[in-house]
Length: 79
Image (cartoon, rainbow, N blue to C red; front, top):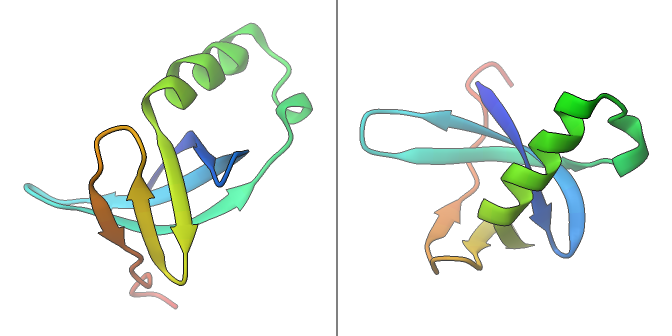
């Protein structure tokens, strides 16, 4: 499982996803505070990732606001 930072419903969040050869499945997200990331490298991640990933979440469905793709939330196999 991988993660990155994104804007979800207008708030900063970590999104968790699983990537296969031709598909990306979003597992979930967790809202975070910008103040939790204090190093210069982490601040750069926020700037870089939030510019690329802006999502809207509702009832288990993520919609990418940048390119219009829709992703169904998947449940992790170990849960």
